[in-house]
Structure formats: C-alpha cells, structure tokens
Image: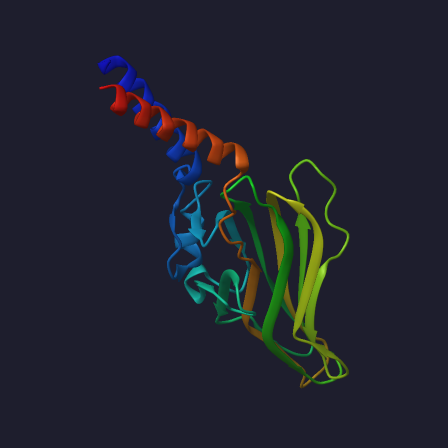
Length: 231
C-alpha cells in the first residue's frame, strides 16, 4: 500500500512538473556598458521570455564605456521586449568624415513551444548637409538557414528620414543579429550622429496546457485518490 501511494505521488509530481517547469536559464539582463554585455558570453541574460547572448561590439571611434545597454519591456509597442542602446561618440564632421559601430548578438526563445516571428528597430539620430547620413542596417539570420530576406533599415538624411522599421517572418527559435550603425559627413560643414538605437521582439504569453498534459495530471491525482480511499 505504501509503495502504491509513493508511485501515485510520483505520477502527480511529474505531471505538475510537465505543466509548469522551465529549464534554468541565464540571469536577468541589467543595465550595463558594452563590455559587461560582452562578458556574459554564450550564457547571456534574459529579458521576458527570451535569452540574449554572444554580444560583440566593434568600433574604432566608440569605446565600450560609451555604449550603455538598457533592457526593458514595451520599448516600442505594448508587449514588446528588448533593449535600448545609448551611444556617446558615434558622431562625425565633414569633409570626408565617417565612422561606425557594429553589434552582433543572438536572441533565442526560452520555451520551445514558441517561436520568434518579428523584429523591430528604431533609432535616434540626425544628419546635416547634403553629404550627411545617419544609418542603421540590420540582418537577421537563423542558424544553419538562409538569412531573412528583409534587412531592417532606419536612417536620417537631408532628403529623407525613417526612424523605425519592422520585419515579420516565419517563426524561428533562434536568430543571429548583425547591426551596423554608421554616420557619414562627406562635405564641408556636414554633420551626422546616432545617439540611440532600440531593438525589440514580441513578448509571448505562457501557453494553455496541452490536453495530454492535463490528462497526465488527472491520472496522477486520480491515483492518489484511489490509494487514499483503499488505505
């Protein structure tokens, strides 16, 4: 009788674990400079239901201390999660001035029941003069698959401005992101700068338990009731 009760309790415990358990993941992301995010390595950190990892910042003109990463939720639209970059020093003056900041990182879902199906990009920047341009371009590449066709692009120039962009695509569990932030000032008196970039992905709610999981839970609880009644 005692052994039957033990097995019934094991069944119920496994059922509950299947419903609510999640694998252990990286620490929560916190505000820090580029170097602190690079130090996270492959383990990365989590924002909402996603893990961000493998950060790599590269620039000739902008030091790690001048790039601050701020994680958050609802940055661009309600329900979005991601992070903002505050950048000091991504500026150039003409004639012939140019510099850039390249960021690479990986974003992955923590729950295999869900997939990443969109990416949002926005920036704060400006350009002055006919040869001035502030530009951010971004490619999204699932591992071992072709990159997503749409390249995200935001920019400011004397003739046109686009401060935000979005890409929707078939869902994937992981994306490798490459973001190139560039400023150009080709003519005398031209000026361009980028002071902030926001990146978000849709936050997904916890799914409703599958019928098979509910059946497993019910079987475990029923076993407990039967054993208790016999006892």
